[in-house]
Length: 128
Image (cartoon, rainbow, N blue to C red; front, side):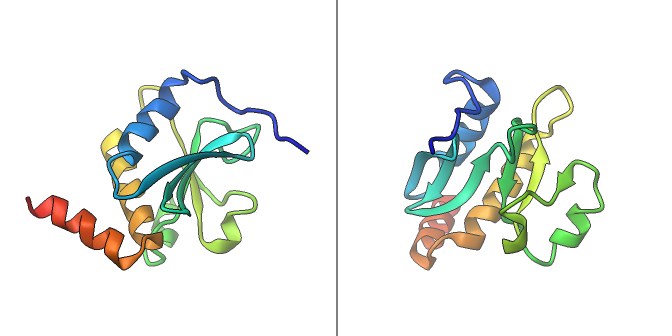
């Protein structure tokens, strides 16, 4: 069964997330479940659209120590399928999105799943 596409090709929210994710070492993008997924090599670190009824959301893997605090904020939720693995979802779009904070969440998610060499390459970039 093929999943329906959740986003148009030129969706500005997806483009904004893609721009943030594309800066990471060994970045890749692949369509899965009808939505863009962003990867460090083959491993997911961000997914657009938690569900068909919540398309403008980002699914990410937070630091386990920070997860409880994030869940105290109404913007965050436990996404179906990903939630049991520790992932969270956050609403995106509109004038209220703090894109600096979203970039920090993406960075932490990348660091949770990336290989040591990918993290070393990322940290090397920050030192320059």
